[in-house]
Length: 210
Image (cartoon, rainbow, N blue to C red; front, side, top):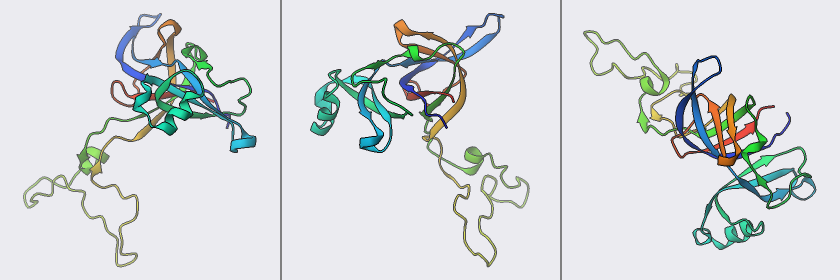
């Protein structure tokens, strides 16, 4: 699989636009970059080729000394978020070079990765769409329970991965075929068709789709 370049962004919210044919399209606004190259990794030294990008400037005193030393080499300031992008070749990149929204254009297909909204502890009906148990006479306080979870005498255990109550959301989620509707480089904004995982102001990573 070809490894492709990407950018770090922040989800600003959703709105709607009108397409050329007059249809109304739901879109998500993403502030994308600019992201300077904080570190350049090469296979001869690090075992693989990659560039590390920074996003969202912060004062240096909010970092510890090792972090300040690592980020200070590129002379572009200090950043709250760092992400790596593995590439086939990094010859065209230099430390301190800025990656902007201009690497994408309208019509491109991208992979979007973010952390979904956390919804706290949830039962199996909300979390996994279980039907629940019968809600008729003779059934007491079992209507929303998962039912039996065990096996027979053999193997006599609950298998790993069993769908159970637990924390819902707050997971890494990737949408693999999102379409870019518009790119506004002067505002560092990318407009994507449809929804994007995560809350408003959540961090989103955009990568070109292979």
